View 1 (cartoon, helix red, strand yellow):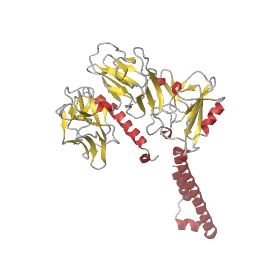
View 2 (cartoon, rainbow, N blue to C red):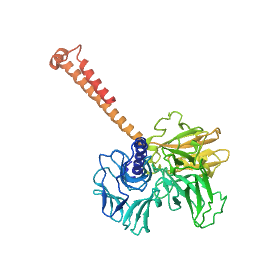
View 3 (cartoon, one colour):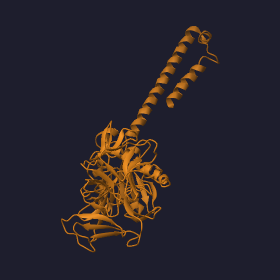
Length: 495
């Protein structure tokens, strides 16, 4: 796959690097307090470049309390993101949504000329607030703000463009999305619900397959049609859903510490596994206080590509002959987005498994069919279909239009799955090497036969003794070293 033709693949790789590096660095940063001679505001003319001597986080701006800092965050040895960190824990609470990851060298620069701009003199602008402001400052709630000098006009704020985290009293509206660090999952609001989406095979603005849908219970207030809703993380320990113009929640998702006195701040984060989790700060660590999905097998891909999840998070593979390991079950070419059209048309083998179902089938569309054969047939000739799951008792046929993820093991053997496994990338390489090896092998045989023929000709015309003396062969008979040379050629081919 040409990575230049697939920007989503590049973004996914970069986001994956950020996930891994942040997790590793959080362990070490917590032991080193971030010292703060940095300013409390940025004025026009401000410029900063990455310091090569800094290994983790380079602070550029602090809030008044010193609890939050804006700066360059290393995501790997050579790249950075512009992020706001919770200083005591070194946990990012916001990151700029850049077109690509800037490099940690001098050409990369953060400047303020009325707009806060992250750029590179070689490749241009990565990200900008696109404003005409006078100052940039960081609130004590972690909100990054571009403002006029009158102190009232807010031109831009990071709370309107969250990344993967919401903090206390931050409004989350229908115009926003939380996106996990690896780019696979998002949280969005509907007219009367909050939904979690998986973007396994889709591109563009399509949020992907919904795997959790929490509708407003409307216990304290009814939803008025046509009035937008928004979500707020409250200090009392709950996610409240409200309608504009009302202070009474239409829904309450309570945390473990609901209505308890917790002195530390709270946050919720859409994790790289697709779960939405809530935490509170004790002063020394973050404590898990809420999980939208409590059962691991209900996560969209808890065991990875072509995985099988049994209750209790016991992972195995859909294909019995494949052993589940650190890299999961699927081949690399089956983890990318796409379909079986074009270059991959008909390049697949079929994997069948009984006793399986989808973890979020209630939220998937289906067609009713009379048999598993009809269900499979609807997918087999459809190049955008990766597989189907069929229930014999209901006749429901669930069609999957994205690369196969984790299925859930069930005791009902009448629930069966038909899955396509992409072939082509690996097979092509194997066939190429096999062809090369066979070519060399038969070439060596021809050379061997030619040498034997030449030797036989000389023996017949000049005698064995003359041939041996002329060629300087040492050993018993004229063929010993000839044979060894030929077999060495065959050995090289087989390697």
